[in-house]
Image 1 (spheres, rainbow, N blue to C red):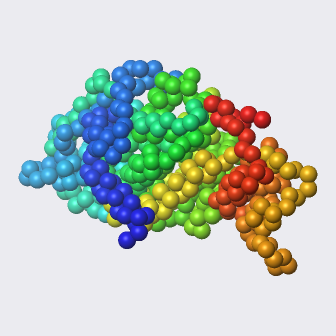
Image 2: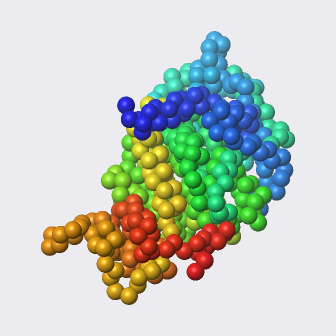
Length: 437
């Protein structure tokens, strides 16, 4: 088994450990999840009190649930939260009542077109209660009176999120963001978390130009809360990725930032092309995951979203079929490789100046050209010529790779060799990451 496969198995095992936990936008499920993740990386846990204003929103009451069920007239549990945490409408208010079937149906959610699957539904900001069940379960309910019980609480508490900061040589940051608010949904929730954790493990052992911030927060309200608390420092985020749905067998999908041509957008397009895997690039839209918060007009950060099958475009989305069988180690491993390649491209994307700009320098006397001529040009030499020609202090290596059509790694290696030969110099970056010309 290769190292990549080993990482895939370990990511899948981490997802399996987290899968049974009933998460929501607040509560002990989030805390339990973050406590497990602290074992994998040194997360700092933050608690933001209920009622805290965060732009146009307010941190909601904290929700916790202990048990829930529906019993028939014989006292048999026909729906049981302990069998699947998707059975309860997420954020349900507590209830204990007896209802006829006709009235109970007003609080039941099913998928008639997928009769064996349980849907995932929420009611975060409107207090109500409900149950989700398979449509076949609903069809089996007799016309009688049912006892319903949801042992939950909605009370003043906190919104919880986790953060891991890896300092680099500059104060410029790369943000890796995952939502951590879904219960037993493997692809939509846990795949992104698992890949982010293993990306953090990899980067922790590397020399870093950029600082990296890993944010594990509840969807929407979590990102909004973080931005509200860090509004003055958000400008440090120069590049970012929201990771979600990266464990299924679908082709890669990269959703561009609001800017459309941010460096991360260009890097992801290049990395996905060079990966050899099927992929698609889609334009930004103001709906989806937390990229829409980071790309809101008041921030307009260079943050895109990496997925495989896009949300809402695979049948298993927000259903019990998004289980541990739906995500595979090899897909998680492939997603991690793409993220590592993106980080390497961001780290390696420097600007250089040609120190012999008047005509083409003689590469042969520096040992950079083959001893005999006449044959077709080698890709390594071709890359060196491209780097020399475009290294005028205004073109980055990413610019050169895009224009030449050559692999970024080859362009980067060519720049290293040309620097060693005295033909090229790297333009120094200032502490904020800009180029000092």
